[in-house]
Image 1 (cartoon, rainbow, N blue to C red):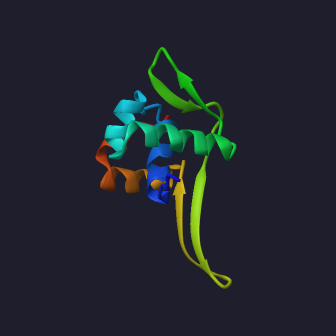
Image 2: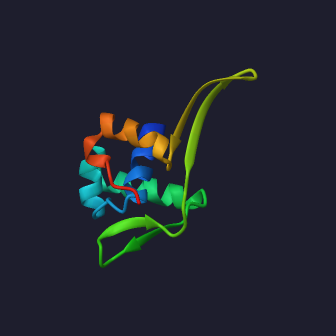
Length: 106
């Protein structure tokens, strides 16, 4: 069984949202994993209901509709941390941690 982290999923989400994945091979280099794992991650996200499609002309994966992803850490009824992907609040996080993941938003 292939396991992937929330960080990998958030980074993949960002590249998809920005139409900046490139081919599976290019995306694997961006994520630091194998091409096989990229295919697995995308299929896993599709299985969860994310509307991921492939644009053959632009050579990129993209969402067919707007998608936002959130993760949180909660102990009891207290939320300790929330990580969001898909809104402008996370843009600074991606730019600082992964410069190649930044994109322009209109």
